[in-house]
Amino acid sequence: MVLNDVLANVYSHILNCENLGKKTCRVRPKSKMVAANLTILQDEGFIGEFKEVDDGKGGYIEINLLNNINKCGVIKPRYAVKKDQFDKFEKRFLPARNMGLLIISTPKGLMTHNNAKSKDIGGKLIAYCY
Image 1 (spheres, rainbow, N blue to C red):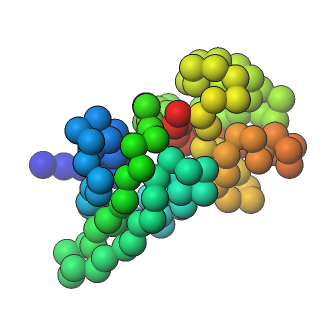
Image 2: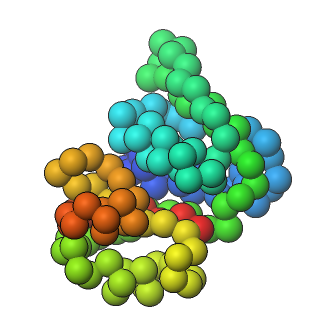
C-alpha cells in the first residue's frame, strides 16, 4: 500500500484512537513535519506527551491521548492565507470563533493562526483541530 500523505494519516489515526477511547496511539513513519504538528497540539493541550522511537524501519511516534479532540484533519489543498484573511478560514474549518486552532506554515515556521495574527504574517494552511 502506498502512503501519499503522512500528515493526513497521522491526524486520521489520532482521531480514530480518540473516538475509540484509547489512551495511546502509535503513528508511523515519523518526520519533522509530524513532530512539529504534534508539538503545537501538545502546547495547546489537545494531546499529552509524545516520544519518537527509532525501530530501524523508519521509526514511529507514540502519543499519549487526553481525549480532548472532537475533530482534526489536514487541509487540502493547502490554501494560501494573507494576514487579514484568517476569519474566512476560521468560519470554514472551525465550529466557532475562538474554538480550536488552525495550523499555519509561515516563513517563521509552523504556528497557530492566533500566533500568526498577533505577528501579522500569513502562510499556508496545514491542519485544523478542535
